[in-house]
Image 1 (tube, one colour):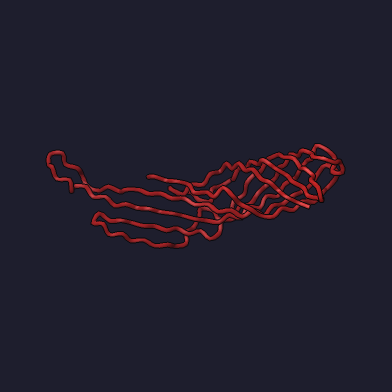
Image 2: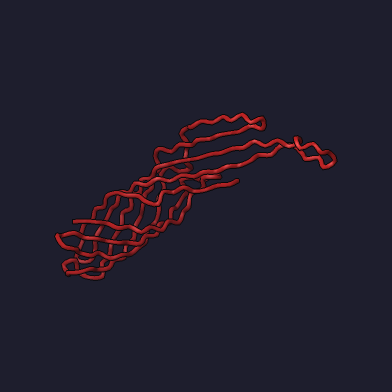
Length: 186
């Protein structure tokens, strides 16, 4: 089987943060992304008899499948800053918490080419193994204050998903996710 993941590497969304103290904050993100998988396989039936020159003893059926889905990720995180929020300039932070991923608009297109060359195909709604999964999130970054009240916060995050959204070949989900996020705020 030849499989390929087609995760779109760019996603977007909104972020909220609420200060709980001078160096502690609670944040929640609402992130939208897309993912997909493609796979192809040739199924060979029959026995190749070495005593004959006939090449038609085996027959090949080709199967191609493409699955697409949209994800809503909602991480809820505690942020621990290395200095007071009243301090000017940039300040670093560590973050940790939980995330929920919800898969929507899951569609699969499947195409089968029989040994006689006839191709049939169609699209249908697919069922993921788990349409909603939880994950543990850890990360860090820093918050920079720019002119005009603009805040820029680059961050590196790691999420360990506790279950697979897709759990059947060829659409096996990855449980480890690394992200680089850049948040803009006022």
